[in-house]
Length: 205
Image 1 (cartoon, rainbow, N blue to C red):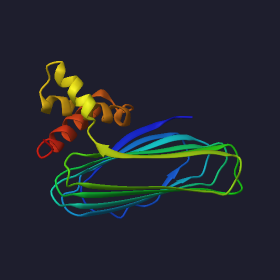
Image 2 (image 1 turned 180 degrees about the vertical axis):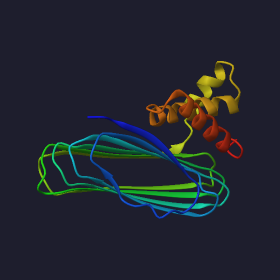
Image 3 (image 1 turned 90 degrees about the vertical axis):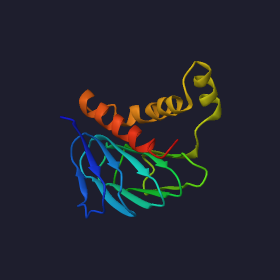
Image 4 (image 1 turned 45 degrees about the vertical axis):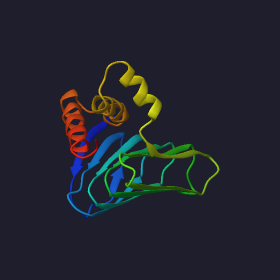
């Protein structure tokens, strides 16, 4: 089965059609809104497949960014991972809700939700809400939620090696992004890494 890998950059509210998965997928959505932002997206798995859908969300100033991801599995023998990393700075606020549904007439499925939030300033806020609705016993499911500031021990360790505070922050954030962008081409991955780091540190230092 051919795997499809791609990325999509979104900076304003859009009406997106449901995303139908019938073959293996690896996708990343980079959300960098220019204003307050409401993002809602439905993902529906209709055939056996192995897919990972990643979301990177950036917010600065006093922007309010609300994201709601709904996933549904209507087939057997499917795997769907939804991963998100949220970066909030200044007085911004990000909320990420991931809802995953698995149909009762299915077997041998795997569903996973990951929400990670990084607060770049003390006045920023991030809210995460992972939710599972599992209607069958023959499924493996998990979710995780982790929100916090940059790790002080990591900052101290890298700075002890001679890096400046700004360089240290960039190194740590780059490590967060590598996994979510790993399946893109080197050219595309480097483009987004540079864009995200520059975007964040226009205001995040």
